[in-house]
Length: 271
Image (spheres, rainbow, N blue to C red):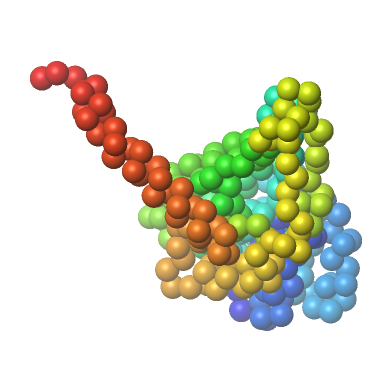
């Protein structure tokens, strides 16, 4: 039996992770803005489900709740930073508030979860830090620029962090799903495109949820298996669309860089 700490646990992949971990016999410390949405699981699993209200953008509250979770359990084996949000719209059309809120929820909060979790994991001798990222941390779509900005930031932060914390017995997993059939797309804000962008690349709608290839239960199952494995991977690319799009993008980027080898070397300092 292991113990999991999960943010954004009331819906989507977070809720699925809570359910599957409990079904497997593990303990879960689940946090959400409204933990009452987990009442049905509390009735079913009793004291194996620990719940607290948490707004991940409130760093003081985050530190307090994480500390309580570690204090109330003998050990927390896996910390999952899952909370996130989305805004669809041309980059220019987003309000300052939408930009700031997206960064606060998707990037800053992810960094703060890790910063608060690492010393707690180190004190107990290690553990696993799972960050829910996206294939959108490697590729981009028009009309989703601020989301991509946060996920590319998440990718850079956690890749560097992974090297720093490995000596403490802490493994870091970046989970990179494709388009998954969750309520994420339905709950995302949509900003109508302004006149200059009408009919252009940003003037598109996301595909219907029922056409997306990703399975919420499949993603959660893969995350649990990876986190509990003997060697958790730094990156966990999930769903066929993510595999095809990300590997294709990496190949294109590498080809473009290789074509610039001569000019890259020409910019070196002359010896």
